[in-house]
Length: 402
Image 1 (cartoon, one colour):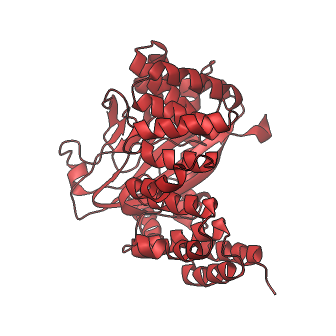
Image 2 (cartoon, rainbow, N blue to C red; image 1 turned 135 degrees about the vertical axis):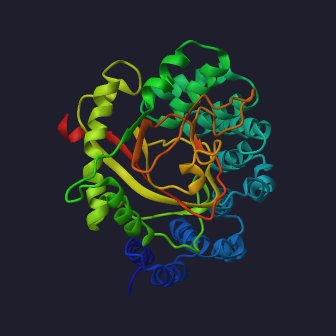
């Protein structure tokens, strides 16, 4: 007889093979055996949300578990995370607020509620972060939340101190670097300009058609068809992602056996090498990691629909991030205004003083844009019945070659 962890492992394997219906059945069996297994609830919520876009369906298993285990903070935290991951930060905060009022509320619960509040009101997030850090002085999650909340309420100098403290132990955390650079920008510190030199560190390059294709346009047609097969035209965006009004693939495209997709990743090698030569070496967070080679660290495709966009975000576990443009709607090909452009510099968190974008790139089919993973970046919405199809990846230093 299978245990709950075995059912969970089977569900994840089925999802990797695109068998979501069978994966859902496996998860339900897993939760029958262990109704408090958070990983199973999260995975089931992801499947149901992508299929329906209905938060009630997505959290149904959690709601059922909470009727039996109403004092389980982990279950409440999981529900709040799913609500926030679907874009309902206020609902996530309201879900946890009564429990955070308890004098002995767990630090992890305070942080989870604070992360929800951070999306719409950094004031309560600041209070929750301070309480969590008082209870757990070594908590990096609480200190990170505190730094972000301090930026939100206009205390950039205090936030910078916390960022620099955290970066001593996690110097490659791209989110922490993004918080640090945001604080520096708010303070008018000259270090910001060297860390966020958009003109030099954002590099657009046109791809060369990989063998056996001789024409880039023909390659993009074949590649677009291969990618379209991976997107559900009726699906919803994944939970916990920056895109709105679109879909994102779940498999790591670097492992794809499709000839066109595999050829795309061969075509990426030369531009990445050129980028590393372009930025050179140095002591800053980007350049000091240059020199031991690189490897892909995950890849995905995004298909945005009419009025689709990406909220401003960073890639916390990356080093070099990217956007490769495969198909663009007519409004973008014609260059109408700012529709669909790639924008840099606007933080994805509330800041005490509004910070506008500082750099942008107008995409073209076949263009690959490379940039540091700690750069805040997003896209401007576009209006068109035609989709905007892209591929993105993160690259990290290859320590195996160090």
